[in-house]
Amino acid sequence: MEDLAKILLLANCAVNIPLALASVIGNALVLHAVWKTPSLRSPSILLLCGLALSDFAVGAVVQPLFITHVLVKLFGSFAVENLVNNLYNTVAFSLCGISFFTIALISLDRLIAVVKPFKYPNIVTVPRVVFTLMGMWLLFSSIASMQVWAVNVLWSTVVLVVFCGFCISTISHVKIYRIVRQHQNAIQVQMQAVQVSVTNAINMTRLKKSAQNTFIVYLVLILCYSPYAVVGVTTFIYPSGRYLPRILVSTIVFMKSSLNPILYCWRSREIRVVVAQTCRPLVFWRRNVRRQIHPANQ
Image (cartoon, rainbow, N blue to C red; front, side, top):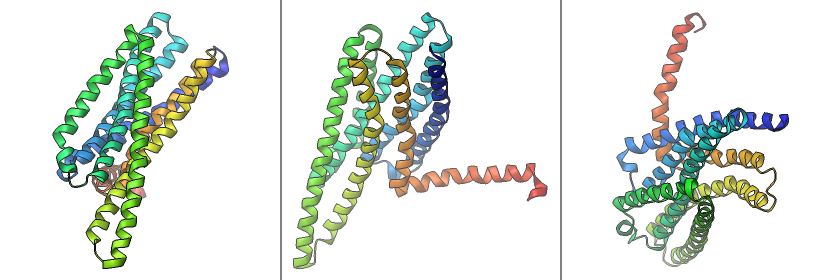
């Protein structure tokens, strides 16, 4: 392998270390916030926790395996490289697929909330969400295991899953946008005529904000996955020299797991407050340690 390619791969590994730490810490704080606050344990927030859990696993498991995979590729033997490569691909396909499809479920959840706001609590319940998330984890783990015995089938399945998830998310957001616009126009007409429907206006504003939050997470996913998709299509047409580009754009995919906790805290005041309360004692502890080490500077 050329020296420039080695330097790029090693630099890419170095970039993944802080990204992995940010993903683990950020998503752990979000999960802790929901665990600590019973009022946050609604079905929609539990779906968000499913996404945070998969992103946490990406930072804790996939990215360390990714770094190991690259280092073994550069400095290890072929036998070890093949073993690490199979392990990395299996776990990565599983968790990235779970993350991708969880966002599709979140989009579908928001669509149901907008289309059937009164029936939503009976349709989307906590047990159903938990059951769906558990089934999805088992399904994608089984699909990813095909890396060992049916690679061609695995790639076909991955393409199908990505296509289905993309269609579900896109169609859901398009329908949400249209319905919200229709409701807003109807509410404006009612308020101008009778000066009522204030409750409907408040509920629609809340649902609109929730849908916007979901759309932002979906948009970040598209932005992070698009370079990998482009490289995948390009290397399928031109197979030579595909390793380096695929490794580099994989880091952009992993970046999504680090960005999502920031989005949760930015868009959700409840999560932001609990995360801030969790981090505040750590900041005070750090200041106290500094005062004990450098008392003369205080």
